[in-house]
Image (cartoon, rainbow, N blue to C red; front, side, top):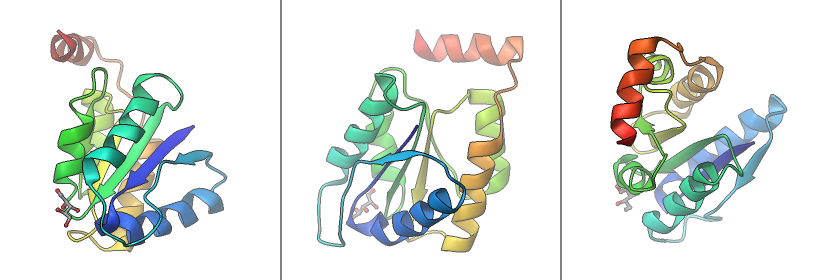
Length: 142
Ligand code: RB5
């Protein structure tokens, strides 16, 4: 189960991503927001991050205008490794090296077509399970 959330700045891109998830039969829980009316991104980032941290969802995608505020928020939640990625190389690397469990996107930074490729890469790249990456992730948790 994938957690997804956005603020008003990310609402349009979230709709595009929901269309992608529906088309690929990927199950998700949408934690809002539900329009382009201004809201506070920390609330929505927190909701999705908590769902991943407590095991209700195994990964999450969060979107705001830049992706910055909402990723900072998610990374405050213990157990969350949220990567802000606007390219496929970073999306693959953060899965392989960091076992990132959340992806943040900035809807004002990246076009929807490119963002969907980043989402696809993030969702389809497994963790390397490499001993040195496991050690480094354990150090993050400490
Ligand atoms: C909202 O205007 C904007 O600040 C927000 O979407 C995000 O970019 C914050 O980091």
